[in-house]
Image 1 (cartoon, one colour):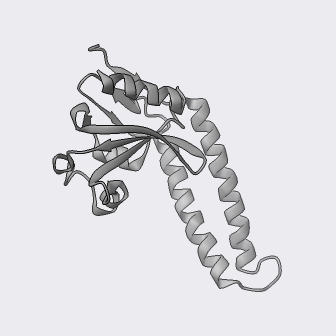
Image 2 (image 1 turned 135 degrees about the vertical axis):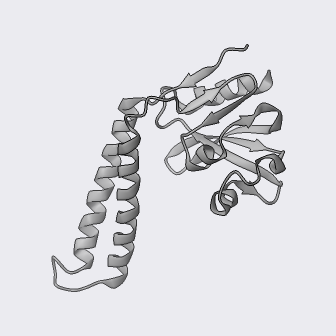
Length: 172
């Protein structure tokens, strides 16, 4: 099993994600306009600040996704020695992970998405690859392991198929 599997962006799924993001951006813009008093003349500071900040973050993420839509490189690569992915910020930052360091694979429901969670034991090997913020997101203090999530929301297959694919290569 020396072949390498490359999973590419599914443009239909990406388009749907962008449409959802646009809908959320429109709702946030309406909330911001309401918060600054456009409709009733009453300024609501908490609503204005919260909706403005979230709108700014959502717009940034939307433009980032639009900029990467023309990228034809694979989002996930799997081979007999290891894997790498760019479907989540943490997975992208950690880069290539070797199978010998993987201790567990699970499907986890996070928000509206099902993610493949991969637990990594040899944390010293991966220390220094990512910022402190991303390290804190991935590091599980109770088990002293790294949990790196991979999403199937933008690739050609669903989360169950991605999980089975990871499992097939890991068990080898």
